[in-house]
Each structure stands twice: as C-alpha cells, then as structure tokens.
Image 1 (cartoon, one colour):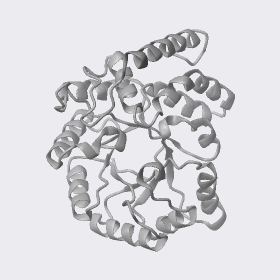
Image 2 (spheres, one colour):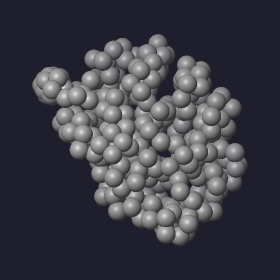
Image 3 (cartoon, helix red, strand yellow):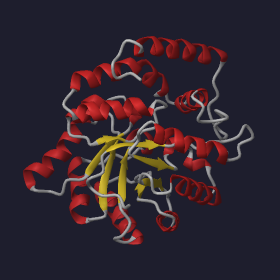
Image 4 (cartoon, helix red, strand yellow):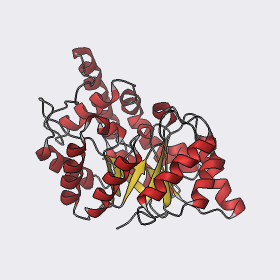
Length: 312
C-alpha cells in the first residue's frame, strides 16, 4: 500500500501517547489507532512534529513506528515522519519504516538552508539516499523549519524526482502557493501530486477550494476534518463551511504556539483515546484557567452540533 499521487482524504497526524512519567504508552497507542479509524480517516501519519518526534530517541522512534504499523495492520496507509539533520539517520529510519509496512515517509527541509539551489541539492541527496522505491511527502512548514520554498522550486523537485508524490501544505500565507503549484500542473503539463493541508485544519475549506486533496493534521476531532473534506468533494461547500465553523473556536484554541499540543492531548484524553494528556519534557502544561476555557468551548460545541445535520 505505497503512497501515490492519488492520495486524498484525511491522513491524521497521530499524537504520541506518553504516561505521566514520560514513557511511551502503548495501550493508549492501540486505543488511539482505533479511535482514528472509527472517525473515518483515510490514513495516518506518525512521528510528525506534533507527534513529538524530536523528543524520541532512535530506539523509541523505531519501536513506536513498529507498534503502530502492526496495530494498523494495513487497514489504512501510514506515513512516517523521518526528518533529521543527518541524511544517513533519515535514510535508516525511512527504510526501517518501509520494511515494516509504511506507505511512505515525510521529510521537512533542513534548517539553515539559505538558498533555493542549496535546498534543491539537499533534497537531491535525500532522494538518492532513500532510493526510488520510497515515496516521499514534502513537509512545507516554514513557520517551524524557518525554510521557505517557492512554488516553482517545488514543481522542479516534482519533475525531477518521481518518488516525490505529496505536498504537506502549511505555509502562512499559503493559499496562493497552493494555487501556483496546481496551475503548473494544468498549464505546463507538470506532474500532479497529492496536496494535503496542515495547520490544524485552520484554512481547510479555502484550501479545498484551491485544489487540495484533503488534510494532514492532528485536530482532536478527526470527524470534522473527514466531514469537511467529503462535503467539499461533493460540491457542498456551504455545508462544509457550516460544519467547519462549528469547530472553529476549538481549532483556534488548539493552534496556539506553545500550548496547542497540550490542548489537543487533553481533548483526546477526554474523548477516551488517551489515558494521559502528558507531553514529553520539555512540553506545555495546562493551567486550571486553560481547562475552564476548554470546558466552556466543548460545551458550546455540543450545543451547536445538536442543531447541525452533519455534526455527529
């Protein structure tokens, strides 16, 4: 089940469950997989930035991806985040993931790459180290990586490297970049790749209208992402926006830099998917006032959904 340019829908960014003492909680990992599948996701992405991948050792990463891939057991495709400053480390984790049944890997640019020529050179080395049989999703998240890529350079990478099959789009502002990537495919005959969008789903209806194929983010209500994507694909854009708007206060709350992951995990705990909302140190913790805000917004969401045909 390898990743292809036809991938679409919702590839949920999985949280990495921890116990209160910081150990990986594999029982919660099992529940989390079933929770995501029950909400109708098309695929999963593990070891992403919001999956706390930088806090895991190499042994932890391999153990976690092995466990998750075994639990998913081919029911949906799984992408594994493998970004690393060292290309050898990146390639080793990528091949370990593919050997265990991953559909592909996700790679973000290396921090400190100052020019587009150097950026191209770095990814040329990445693709060479991975080999042609490892499908790659390019993670475009300049807010986190500090590295921007133009639409023209991304399209050049697409043309030169067949294993580049997906863009995870989360630039700010990024709608016009999404449009430019799509325009190149239609106007010049460039290869069309899958585009899934991140940023907590904050711009999802607009991104779908600009040509995205779906979402790749970890919002704690995957069913909203699935509903919005499906409604947009069916041409029911106003209904999709109505559903999105009901969840917007919580999307906004979850998007706070420095606090969003703790909020996401607290919601997943309340929904029964996690035993603990703990993040691995150093990580954010919620105050009593934060929890009160969350109580109020969750109650308001329940009230709004009762009056919506697509809210359940």
